[in-house]
Image (cartoon, rainbow, N blue to C red; front, side, top):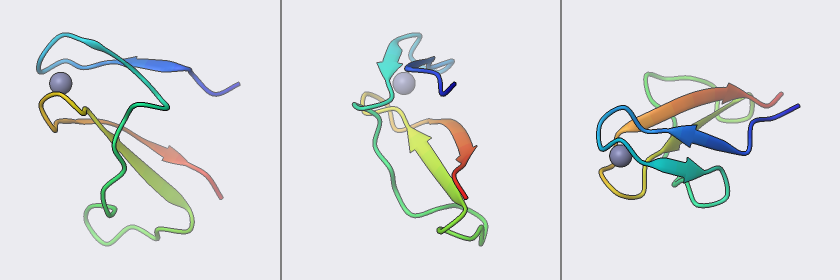
Length: 52
Ligand SMILES: [Zn+2]
């Protein structure tokens, strides 16, 4: 089951998955398979999830 929220280690806030921003994937990962979630408060990367 997908986690509903993530802890940002940079600004120490809890970020709901629905509130996280999704910039283009880093490092040449396949966008169809990987989704990067970033903190909307400080922009730090929270996690990269496999979606495909
Ligand atoms: Zn943050």
